Image (cartoon, rainbow, N blue to C red; front, top):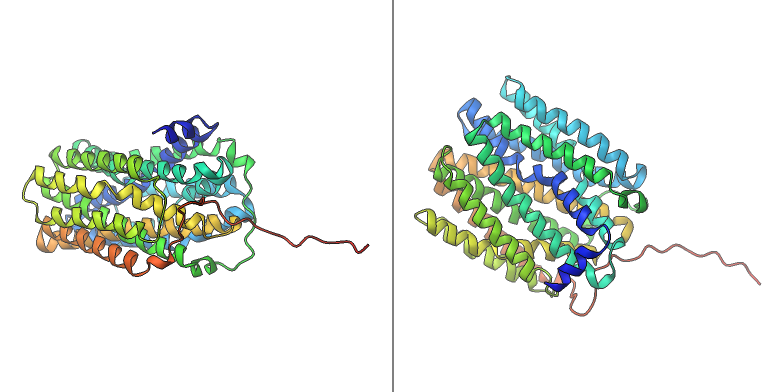
Amino acid sequence: MNVYTDLLRTPGVARIIAAQLTARFPSGMLSLGYLLHMEHLFHSYGAAGLVLAATSVGQAVAGPLTSRWMGVWGMRPVIILTTAVCAASMTAIAFLETELWVYMVLGLVCGLSYPPVQPAVRTIYPKMVNSRQLTPLFSLDASAQELIWIAGPVVVTFVSTQVSTVAGIGLSIAFLIVGGLWFLTSPELGRVRIPRSKRKLGVVLGRPPVLLATVVGFLVVGSCAAIEAGVVAEFGEGGAEAGIVLAIWAVASLLGGLGFGHLPLGPWALARRTLVIFLGTALAAVAWDFWTVAIALVIAGLCLAPALAAMFAMVSASVRFSDTAEAYGWVGTGQLIGAAAGSAVAGFLIDARGPDGAFWASAAFAAAALAVAAAFHRAIPDLRGRDASPIPDTEPVPVTPS
């Protein structure tokens, strides 16, 4: 744990981790928040799935695009604009009473305008710490991200079921605005300038590690989202059991990230970590009560944050600094789409087969993540004995003839 203590003592690290965590917290709240709100309005998980699908389409288009904009106009202007538009669309979804197609359009706008905080902060990290600290920093960030994906649903489920679904979405808006303002006031945003990329949009996906991290991230987070929907459906909207199970999962993931996420990355590391996730989700699919579900999710949770840390490190070590924002934009898009897709698929299966359908969907997502990570393990850079710093950008140096 000394490595994390040293990291948090580095000037600015603890502050920017906390700020970006707060700003990104709605990422883990919106899928279930929209799911519960739409189900409450239309009495159908399928209708909720359509709103989530529209949101995911917007996120798919916006993630890499807004990340590249930060290299053109700067981080602060892009994040201010997207935060304002996203908050307005979320407010409309929470308070308007209208037709399903209108909610789908608003979900699309919400996805298109989701602030690119994740690619911004991961582009800043290499400039804040030395190369020896970078992999542990990605591990710490991944552990914090698990609070987003797992603790976020706990919070929104509790508020939505105990207060109202409008309050659940309203809390997401509060996190978006307060966290966004905190992140925007961080001095590091003014000290780090993302160079304008000279490559066309999407070329960075030609890097096998970036494409692999995007696909596996989509599948892993999709598995998490399906589990979350299944837990809510299994233990009832009015009970506290769902929140408790998800909280246990969050603690397991946090401990796993701090305990294993900083280990050196080898070609098979991602496959091993997704194997543990699959085993846990498969056990959850055959679990029969509160405690067996909780135990299964502890197993799955132990390697969630380490798997995400591996993805961040392999991307960082494989691209030029000017391409890091776009690369992380694609990875973040994969994860956000995974969250929406997992919730949407689980919603339809809950309508058709009950909560068991969502658990089996989660296991299927995790099995696909394992298969992809194992099949393409050669795309993962071997970082044992080397750091995960981005490739430096180089420019031709004019030479004056003597």
